[in-house]
Amino acid sequence: MPETPDLTEFARYAQPRKRPCLISLGEFSEEDRAALDAAVALDNKVIPAGAIVGWLAKRGIEISAQQVYAHRMGRCSCYDER
Ligand SMILES: [Zn+2]
Image 1 (cartoon, rainbow, N blue to C red):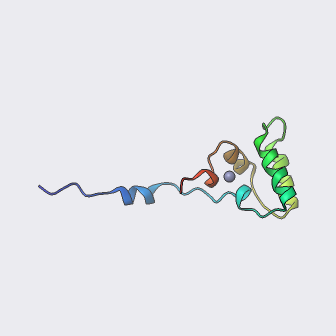
Image 2: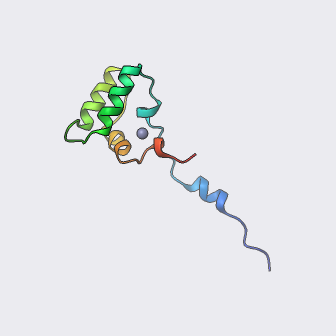
Image 3: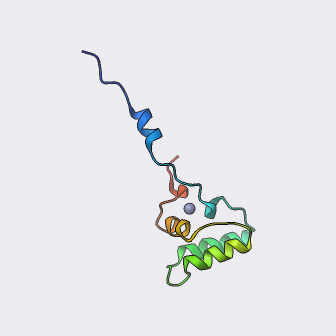
């Protein structure tokens, strides 16, 4: 009887690919990076996702509020295991 083939490689490709998260990928000055990281770490009631979207848009980075939420919840490419 043949051995069960190893399908783990297929499983890997079947995982939905997360969009690269611009919160980490974006290039900022040291000051901006610190401000962004601090803002993102705060609660949505303190710094709404929309405010982060606007802050990033001013710096030429287009991101959706959904992506900010995903980042805050750890569901973005920043948290992928490599
Ligand atoms: Zn992220």
